Image (cartoon, rainbow, N blue to C red; front, side):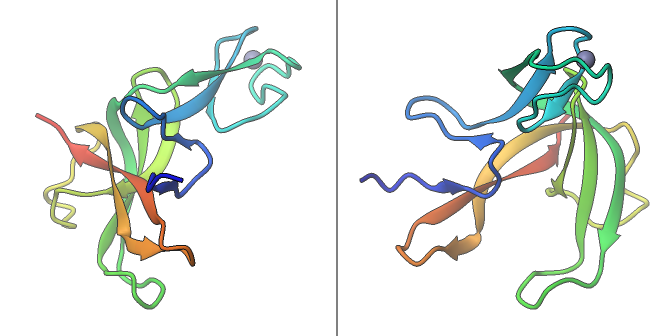
Length: 138
Ligand SMILES: [Zn+2]
């Protein structure tokens, strides 16, 4: 067994070689893209047309909220964001690398997906977890 980290969500894929990425499903009938696995397209209703794909690693900030209260052990405040990726998928995640200050966070600002250790959490076997975040890009 390797020390490969475990993904925090099932749509975060960690290949044996290469960089981690987010996986989506694309409808072969209408081209809509969704996060995670599904059998029926929620846009056009087509069945068994979904194909997995690697999602874009760049996008723009669609919306966000600054979270001031969370579970014990979770550092606050943090920014919970929804990002529109360049391929059309909408993904929810935490925005990092910027102060949780509404004066600094702009709608539609360009962001990229980054992968990092999930707050040092480990499972019972001592495996670490890999999570994804959004970060502003120039
Ligand atoms: Zn469809």
